[in-house]
Length: 320
Image (cartoon, rainbow, N blue to C red; front, side):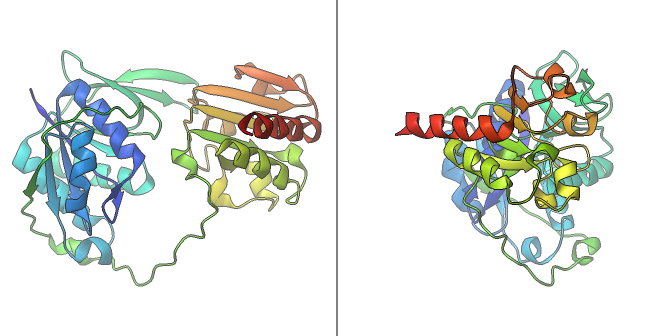
């Protein structure tokens, strides 16, 4: 069976959930070979093997922390040349998409970004994508070279599938461009205690109907009761009610959780483009004609200031 390269997103050896999802998808089209780079790379082996990696290629060097993107592209190219894989899978983060695009250019291959599913095909892997502001769902395959595919978080369930997970050192020679952009400072992101927006299984969002920054406490309370991330529409962000880092939509972040709850959001196409691939969508809006209701699985026509606190209370009571 052909091997499939999986780029590992980890923090000091702790493997992040989107990588484990990639391993599930990789097993559909071949044998996963994981590529872990930077501090703690060797410590990823146990988790990767538990989820199907037959081999783990590791390499650590100061360049991964000190410089942007290019050293990782150099390493992934080295892994590609060593393995000759059937496909290369990368998490669909901002950095991941840049790494994938640069790799595709280097190896002369086509690239597919923001895939939401992956299956084996007679002529190579076939990816499912949501395109044109989520107006269409397409089946796509690369027609030239080895497919380089970025996959959105929450596109597949994490499944344990123990494999050998043999650790091998990856030989990497950095290019002249590897040290072109240096990281001069880092500021730790302030922790909210909530999941990362793009990786969360549940997202609770607020829009223009929240009517003020202080009122987002209602949205946060519901999110905290569900263990969810908090999102916001562009209208809420532009009004200064919530940080841009939490914006969901075409000009914000694209999410694909198991459950998306939209509160006071009308459902403009720009917002729908960022959340339409959610597995289950619930909306609360007092306007029965709001476009969001054309999209939802469950809709509540009512004032969010009445509905959301009741929902939060009900969730908390069932947890208790």
